[in-house]
Length: 151
Image: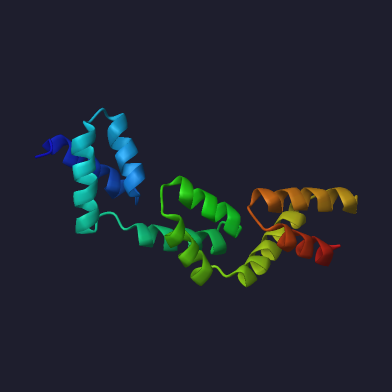
């Protein structure tokens, strides 16, 4: 039976933010709880539905597309870093963030970013826009298409 303190710590962590199994396990291990108890609590909380990794993936895809204006590559990278299964991440991105939508998101980001730029040299402006789009995780073809259209 796990220590009651580990249970309350885990609940407190989950109350603040939706965490994946990996994230909860890592945070509890940093608190120096024994690995066996940590694994038991993580499994129990996952079974009870306190950890819903599918919802985390869906929320991240929606926020990345609509608010953060991120490309599919960056979203996939961030979700995989959080310990989410690649197959589940790819399935949600393929369903909720189609490659065809990526162009519209990239275009929106580029328009907002270009409006803030004060450079008069269009080549310099396009280079900076391309670099910004790349940092946002957009595909090379999408970046090229957006830059060609803005030229």
